[in-house]
Image (cartoon, rainbow, N blue to C red; front, side, top):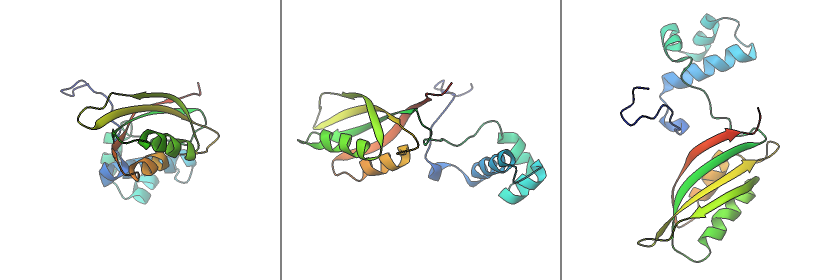
Length: 153
């Protein structure tokens, strides 16, 4: 852990991940699925160098938010408007998730913080689709995932 703030892990959107790291994820997927038998085949198909693969192969993996029993925590800011919290919770439920906990802060300067923990079930719902639903609502600011845990052991 050599980060100045002490964080060892970050959750980032796919669009923020450089192509080289996406290539490493693709090479790992090809190897795991058996579609590539060797690292050479996998990196060639993914369009990356072997050195890039070996440098990052253990440091990046996809965020799989479709597994049953996956618990996701997210945070967003919402305008202090009647009914907006209900709309946000409805968007989460409509995404196929079971809401586990909710915490809304007292609005300051017309904006309240909302933390929600929900669980996806049987492949229904996706944290990505739920975030898109929330971001589409008028009055909701940036939505970000702040944690994830799998119910499987």
